Image (tube, rainbow, N blue to C red; front, side, top):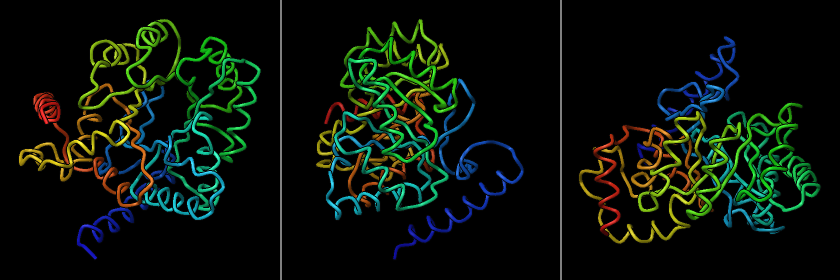
Length: 312
């Protein structure tokens, strides 16, 4: 067993103890693990609550149907995620069986105080959207969702109204909108400028940087939290960089491997709240979560990181 593993386990024990002490004092309504200064926590501007900067996506990776062996393996991924301080799990009815598999894992793990539950409504029909929302509560097995989003802006006017009513009733804590693949930025910008929303989700990574031009500055201006999807371009970006040695100066950004390098570039942006890499492997989850520890690159180093990846 490596020294790194021992250190990590010792840290987690101290982290949980500190979180329990904070909760006992009534200092916040945050998950217990959110109290440690050793994990990168970023604020939700509208509420001031802080969440871990690395979350978990479930597109493709958790769409494993009823296969018991694969469901149990995904539960091990969830277990590692929470052990290493994870919070946000993001899913959608668009992702096949992913919501059901997440719910299976959560039930099998039992109490998961660090969970920040995030899913979406995705349908052109308003009435069907209400049914989807109820289905998500059933599949996840949660009483309250931390975040509900309108997926890919589909029928966003009606669905946002539905989500606002659910929020007023206390079933949902935050609401938002999503897009991906660099699409629908004009529509997202208009909604961000005119609607009262808590979160936006968009694609942002070291090579897909269009969001830097308008959406990220607007999010800061409007006090909207930002979730970054496709941090690895569905794995193709990892495949691209893994064939090259990690630059020696990556240590200046606190990166010990390529996943940390790519994720630290994202979460070091001042407008970004959380990145949501997806994985089906426990060892890859451990690499992802390492991006929440250590130093972060400054603006100058971030430019160097983007240039380096772009030139590979």
